[in-house]
Image (tube, rainbow over all chains, first blue to last red; front, side, top):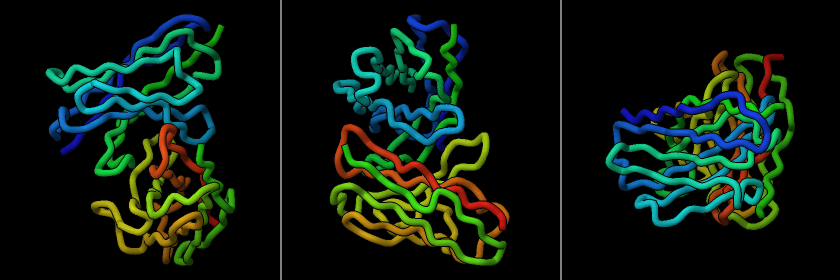
Length: 118
Length: 108
């Protein structure tokens, strides 16, 4: 069965960097684009970024553009979210998610919490 | 950016009753709408995609309808596990992919 597992969250100071990982199993990872979606405490869902199946293209929400990047290692079925210049408003649970035929998400990881605080 | 507005924000329903949740898009998104259920401390779960197609394993008491800018998620005969937050998401025009603010379905 499809499984996604995020890691790398933690408590960091504003202005610093953090790298999140998402390791996948149970499907042909190199056939699918992968997304990050975040949820601030007590708030709704915010799409953050997507990387294409081959890592050739990435797209970002305006709120993180220029600060976050995505990469993937298909040999390890893993995607990464590289977060730089972190701000308190980046505090959230970060989910990785797999899309199906359209850009809707049929599988999600359990999430990893990132807290940006001084 | 396409804005999705969900209503009501909170819906109080007795077990066994039905519930109707609304999602309105700021522009035409054709049928490119999904619905998710989220319980406390859990990741969202896909319920509906293509506005009306149930995802794998979703019981038929969940149904979606609508097109263009007006969409509805209907839950017939709510069970205890259905009390949760429900989000809609459009994937017609991106980036960005966008979500509605959510509707909380609570026990009356």
